[in-house]
Image 1: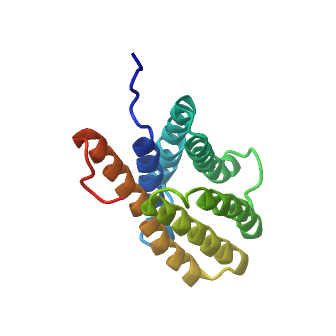
Image 2 (image 1 turned 90 degrees about the vertical axis):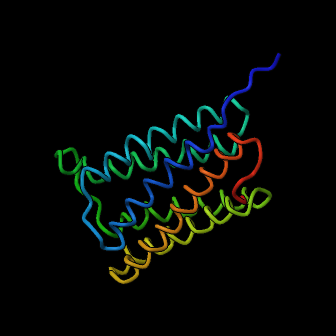
Image 3 (image 1 turned 135 degrees about the vertical axis):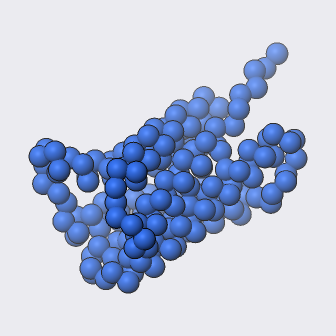
Length: 183
């Protein structure tokens, strides 16, 4: 008899979505970066996504494995760019350098978006909105335009909320054996 494993997708999507919402509430100007965002970034956005990616690997899902492990380590690396300089390990990156950090992640996301084109429309929306978020954040960092940063924050909240929606839609479909929310 074949063993049925739980779908790790909702865990990874929820970890990405909730952490993205919290960081982008900061980007929208509602509060500063604090331990709350950093802890979410390391332990939920980071670690939970890496775990989900490892479980996707076990299922044979290359896309899910690459997405969750990569974005999980994105969160851990992002927090590292904030914490390591404060601990004296290295200099803080300049805005120009952070723009490049975000630009390479944006390029990665564009290729991942292409991978969603034969998937659900909601998953394609999550990745497309992530592409736009990275673009806006790069423009913010390279130009110093605070308005673009605030717009990025609100757009990032939409991106994170769409990932959280998809996590809940997939979990409810699995739990009830039918789609309760469209995805």
